[in-house]
Image (cartoon, rainbow over all chains, first blue to last red; front, side, top):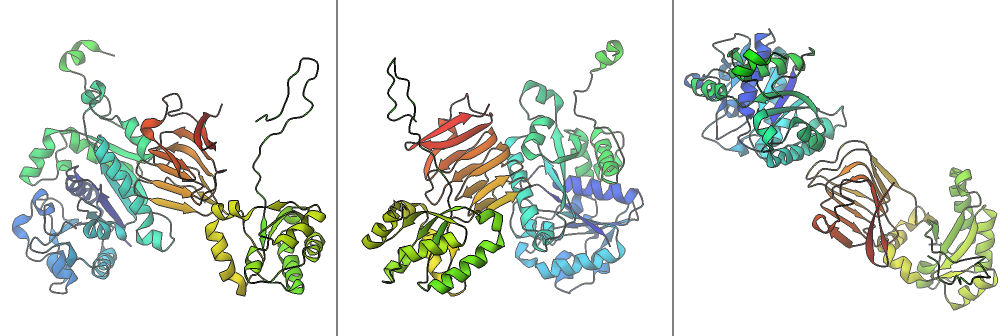
Length: 269
Length: 247
C-alpha cells in the first residue's frame, strides 16, 4: 500500500508545486517508487516544473473518464526511473474531478507505488478538497506571513474534518509544517514572521524550513526540481525534509542568518 | 456582594447576603400518572445512585398545566423524596400548586427566567414524551475537545465546552454553558448562547477576536491591554462583561 501525501496550503503562490516536485524527486532518488499527481486541473504547472511538458499525451482527467489507462498517462521522469508524473488536464476545470474517479486512480496507484504525492491547487474548493481527501500525510506549505499562516490554519481544519480518515473515524492525517521562502535577515528586521511565531500560531510539527532562494526560480524555469541542485540551499533544505520525513534525525538549518564572507573569514565562533 | 451589611463600630456584621449561582437539575414532567413517574424516576436514579443521592431538584410542571393536567404537589414531592432526591423548588405551577408547595416548604420559582435561559429545552421536552417522560432539563453534558480548533471551524456544545488546545483566529466556539480553553484563545468564543447569563469563559491566554456571554459581547479592540495574552475568566456582572485575570 502506498502512502498518500498531499502538498497543500490554502493560499496560492507559496511553493506547493515546487515542494511537490522536490519531495517526489527526493523520495524517488532514495529508491522509493513514487508518483506525483497534479490536481490543479485547468492550471497545469507540475509538468513544467518537472520538465516533462513536451511528453504529455494523456492526463489525469482522461484516466478518470476511462479514456486512457493509468499506464498510458503516467510519464516516467528523465532524471529518475523511480518517479512518475500524472499531469493535470489543461483544457478542463476542477468539476471534471470526481471523488469516485480520484479514489479509483489512487487505489490503482497504491498497488505498485510506495508514495503518491498529490500536488493540491490553491483554495479550498473541489480540487483542493479531492487532493487531500484520501491523504495519509499532509505537507502544509506556509510562507512566513500572516495571510499564508491563516490559510494554512484553515486548511488544517479541513484536513482534520473533511478527509476520508476523518469521515471514517480513522487515525487522523499526519500533518507536517514546511515553512518556505524564509529569509532570516528579514525576520531579524521584523518584516517577516519567525519560525517560532508560525509554530506558535499553528502548533504543528516542523518538518523543515526552505530558505528564499534564487535557485528555486532557476530550477522552475529549467524544469529541473530544485532538490537535484545539491549546491543550492533550497535543494539541501528539501533533501533534509525528505530525510526527516523518512525518519532520519537531521538538525534544522536555514533558520538563522547566513554569515557573510567577512564574518566567515574573521569571525570564527 | 454585601447588600445589607451594616458596619457600625461596635457591632461587626454577623452575616451578609451574597448572590451565588447554582446548577440544579430540573425534573420536567410530562405525565400525570404517578405510577409511571415513580417507576421512571427510580429507574433514572438507579443509573447513578451516588449522583442523585440527596441531590436537590426543582420540578417543572409547566407543560402538564398547559395540558390542564394539574398534579397533586404533595404526592409528587413524596415520590421525589422516596427516590432519594430533595425537592427544593417548583416551576410552572398554578396558584393552588404553588400554595401547596409553600406549605411543604418548597419555594416557587418563576417560569420566565427559565424560559429565557432554556427555550430550546422547553420546546424539546414535550416531543420526547413518548420514550422518556422524565427528563432532567439541566443534564450536565460536557464536550471535550483535545485537538486544536482551526480557522474556519465551528463548534457548538449544548452544555459546557472544554478545549485542551488552542483556538485559532477565525474559529468559532459556542456553548450553552461555560467555555474552558486550556491554550490560547484567538478565535471567537460565545458562552451561554441560549441566554444563560451565569455562563463563563475561561482561557489560559486571551487573544480572542470576540467574546460573548448570553449575547453581550466585546471585540478584540475593546479589550484592555492588561488582560491581553493573560489567563483570564470572563463573566457577566449586571449586564457588563468582566474580564478578570486568573492569578
